[in-house]
Amino acid sequence: MRKAAAVIRNPFAREYGEDLAGLMAWGKPLADLIGGKAVAALGGERPQSFGKGCIVGADGSPEHGVALITSAFGDAFRALAGGKAWVPSNVKRGALGATIDIPLAHKDALYVRDNYDTMEVTVPDAPFPDEIVVICVMATRGRMNARLGGLRAADVKGVDGLR
Image 1: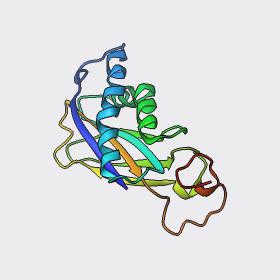
Image 2: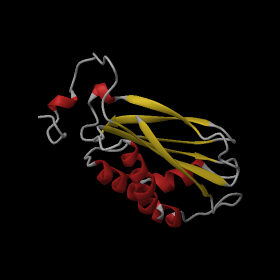
Image 3: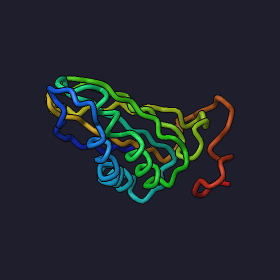
Image 4: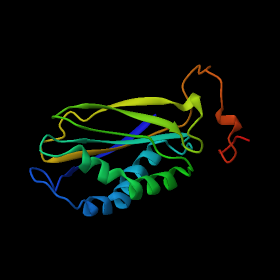
């Protein structure tokens, strides 16, 4: 598993904003930047599963993180992974050094049990109260020794190297 993260200033820290479209508009550029770094961290291997998330500093709201990683971000991140499925996510509010578990699922078929996993992520010096940590995670395989049955990655059409 590999991850990439960026820490950004929250323009809505300490204030309520009814219209979060501005944050949503940052989605695609952020996904291209962070997701691109996650793909590069795989060292040429193809991703098989993915996930996304945010830790919002104490002066913000979880809604700010959700706005950042909703549709525009998810669509761009999915495209970078060459995926078809919905990208699982987690958003929370946290203090400096907070930890978040980012859920992962298969990039092409959400119901591939072998790819249900999480990655614990901590950025020791973030988020400050007026910041948001935005995170992308990718994996090149499912869990080790997965044996719960159901749909398997090998059964999903369109997965690189699998039929």
